[in-house]
Length: 345
Image (cartoon, rainbow, N blue to C red; front, top):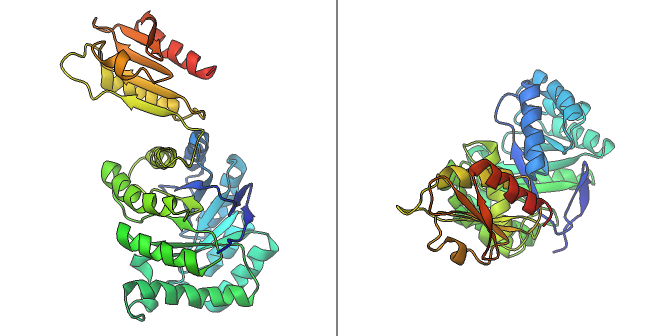
């Protein structure tokens, strides 16, 4: 089914690309810290940022954040539709509402009307933890989602509002696939895909990848978030890694890292993390290797565009390109030279 295409602030959704999202991890009134985080995530490749709106102060704070960031911002609304109206007055680019806890149909209609007037998109975001009055109404657990979704979409259709993104979140990769597969076939709206409550670090990333790999490989999904109970930078790294490995993004670097062993005479873990952190802000298809020793390093990584390896001498590093040595250097100089090569790649 052909999907609607529209703008969310400066970004276009529904055009075949996949937008990366994250969410603020503290109260929205903490404007400076959240603005700084948003700008760093933007430099890493994030496309949109969502913020919780718990009260009037949060809604008003969005106008200050809006002045300090360059990406579209999303107000996350639960229960109280008056907070959505205040967020719209603050200049947000999208409103997220949860059908399971919208407190008033009349209030929702006011939000839709103002969103249309301000050319603001809306996300109808369901999750398993807050189906509330729709829980148990369908023939099975998954059917509850679609009862909630259809009841809410009927209001949007009646008001001829189409700039809608749908999400159907769960913490189960298998349920997520079934929900989004069905939604993709049923509705002409772009989909925000991902798990909720997936966990932290490797656990959350792996669960999310299991769910998202299958969906994205079938062309399902227009915007994604890998939700982690972790540093938000890890969310962006995980999203970028998944999109690169699936061949969806061609403009991202690849990092190959040796697992290290007793032959290694350099601090491989430290230097590989330093390289990875700097690659967070690189947007070109360069393959970079960090290898522990000269036994296999330069040979195993000969297909890398650039690499850094242990030389066999303590704290001395070998730079190489396509299996050919470029010279021996101490750590700081080696890193600077490595990234000077990457800069002109």
